[in-house]
Image (cartoon, rainbow, N blue to C red):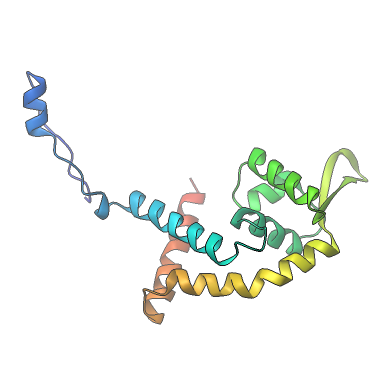
Length: 165
């Protein structure tokens, strides 16, 4: 067990006793904290490296997914990139305002909107893809090549294992 918890059969009699029994958790040894920090680092590196590109990591993920699945609906896209529909909807609105994405009515269900990357969106994506690849390398740079491969593999297993929940 990574975190030791307060266990007793008797409840402490005073707040002072509780303070003496409950110990601080070493956050540097907890997966949740480390994953959150790694996310902060990844977003910071992305923002630093692409500060002039006018694209966020979330916008990149959505554009990239749309390029691979033209004509996908908004709900399916949100699932594919693991964002809630409200977040993906607002991001798609911003991409639409930039002229990078268009929404088209589904000919089989007019209520459903299908999404397509515009030529300007393809161009924007093409301009940053090499930078995004370098960003991934920079994120993993403290690790050896073998550790990088193992780390990505383990993260993938962790995510896949929780997607079944």
